[in-house]
Image (tube, rainbow, N blue to C red; front, side, top):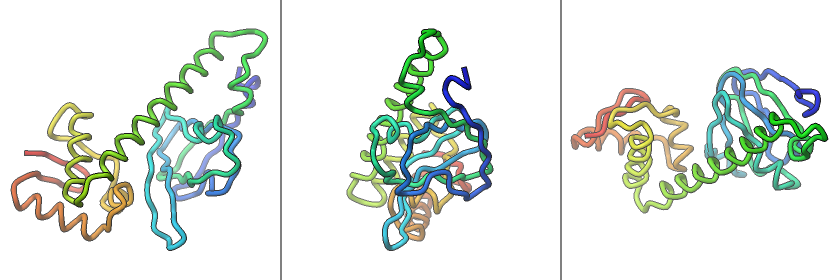
Length: 195
């Protein structure tokens, strides 16, 4: 099956680019080990983290399926990673064997695209808040709901959270400090407790 899909495994070191902005994407990446970030950088060097992919997650699938000429984001290894690449045309074209494995890959691909769409919807919800505090509260509330608890760990450090919310890191840290002083929350690094 792996040869049928032209599957190739590659390793990347932390901070190494897997896809650069402007690349043409004809393959889907599946994270086998480690974590990758999808990010966008403007001409002034401001970085915004659009999403994260962990083991079992796909990346590049939206661009590969849409046959976009050039990638509008970069994909970088947040940690050392091992990635399995699958040729999109071979994934989308069911082989003559009509095997169940291939059908399952297509179902998983559709599920991944749907999850990515939901994640982008959540991000738009956070970023559409008017104030920095409201953006932070929207994000932390969403993470608490996802964790099913008022105590949870987020996948970002301060700089990465600032990039994800498209805000200044020092302003974010100051706002979190104010919220802590007001008794709204407690935090230690990326661990939070809402009150």
